[in-house]
Length: 342
Image 1 (cartoon, one colour):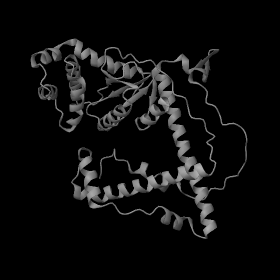
Image 2 (image 1 turned 90 degrees about the vertical axis):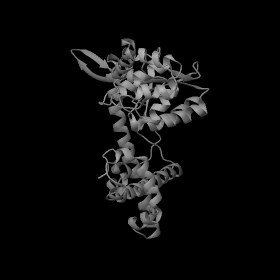
Image 3 (image 1 turned 180 degrees about the vertical axis):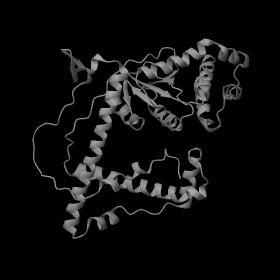
Image 4 (image 1 turned 180 degrees about the horizontal axis):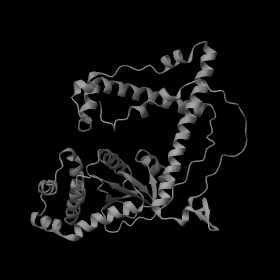
């Protein structure tokens, strides 16, 4: 069985949601779409005669409330997309004299994944798949096939919404804007830029490694318009991530943080408690100064301060990105930055 982090269900939304044909009343309206209430003005409850809004609570509570709202909003969007999809498919099936199933097979037929594609996926995710390729290949092939189908369906939904004068009538929640204490933490790009990205990550987190690659691509394109700040959030229970993070602090003292940072992610699968010294050796850092830095309480304190900042902000996982104080999903990071640049 594949590692549980490889979630098949998210690549087969329609398998569970495309059920009986909808019977929705059609109405026309010229009313404007709903406007979300800013977090600071959103009334939550009254207690002992006092009215409480999100502004009355610390960042971690406001952030958690926003994440709950966002999760609900995303689920609503999925269901709405499915409804739009069904309405369109049923109308076309009726027009063409075909069943929905026949039309679906015609429109969303995909080729079986090649052996090379299955093997490539296995090699890329080997650390998260605790069985040999031979035992996993059928599930991987099904996973890749479902992914292709979902991608075609999502592109199709986007197209029919654009052509059908679709308008979403559900307001997206507004993310709270938080202040993050980034003083003293490594930064690159344009340090005077109007756009600041703050990244919280863990050196042993596979998603953080992939996110780091995406961030590097973003910086290569928009580096003159962005300031990127990195802060450690070593949530892995092995203790290795924290030690590697402390090594990064010491590499920073010698002006080699970003080289150390990149090398640590590159060697993620092989990281051990000895990795800080090994990485320092590969980068030809001053060994004595590095060793002395690792032993200093201030080094551990700097990593802990970043950890505390993440907890204060209510972060529960990695990677986490803030763009100008707004929490942004890693998948949406590039779009968020592009929107601000425009």
